[in-house]
Length: 444
Image 1 (spheres, rainbow, N blue to C red):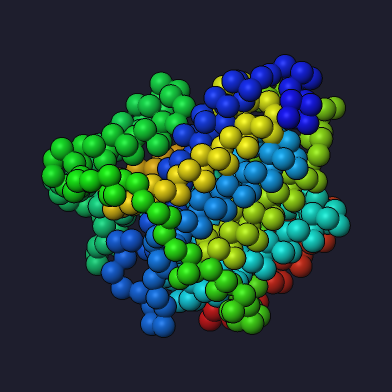
Image 2 (image 1 turned 90 degrees about the horizontal axis):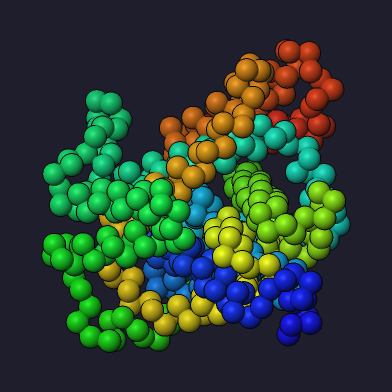
């Protein structure tokens, strides 16, 4: 084992790698409860006609399995201390845009995730992935990340009751005296305190304290027996294989845009996370990431597995930096993290105490972290600022990540051409321009 993971060359040992793997798990354990709540649209009373709600228990199991499998492949094949799990931004896109706004059944949406994963594998194996990533300007990539952050935070504010519907102004401040809203505000505050103090796993610990506060105040019913804390993993039957049975339903213009969005966001998340984690851990060689192809394959394979068992796109997690900060340098740390995700399968009864008021702060805090990319956009260049701003603003305002990407990618070649920067536009951007124009025509 030591030889396989090259402990000596990395200057590490079993104890360090174990603690690193556990630290990474604690830093991202919140996804086990946030993802099922998001995909099951907990708190949303009315669903589009013909659309049903995903089974929360099945999504919990699917989330843990997708995270465990993806992280294990990353650890054993790519040998990196990087963990994977369903991406919170793509989960929000899946639930609130594809299902709730477009009215597309979740079964078809899962088929779209499967398709994106298979395409991702092909692009990775053939090397086309790098060409596509390089074709999309860095500023638009940054804008997409920031826009998703605002969109996620907006959903968190809604779920917490801090923001609510208004017939006069569309949205307005909610009733801050509502007990459940006060509980969510408490969760936001404690999470901010933890993260400000650089506590590893601050988001997860914030959720734990919020649950405790909810129990103390009587807003959350505490478990009364061991069976309400630990129990068998929920069945995958409600979601398993649905992506295959609805694969024929993805061949529409609308689903093409959905699949492209799954691809784009996963591209950006994975590339950014791999570079960030590898740089922090000193794993880059001559400014390049060794075994990059294996790392990308781990990501795409995990997405395929996740779609089959019943969850949204699985991607690399920036929280892996917590484990690297704790000393993780090899894939063994990822093996440990994967083991913790499998162990978490038996704690599904706790889903009942992780209410939307408990998970909402996590969405808001993650939104804050994702919005940090705003500082790197070239706002001084108007031809860049326009598509970037439209991308960012349109996501929360139209309640759609896909619409934000579409608007930004349409305006980019227009403003660049008007500015005389034709040479800076990659031919692929013209193709995307046409696809997104057709997307809006189709919606109309």
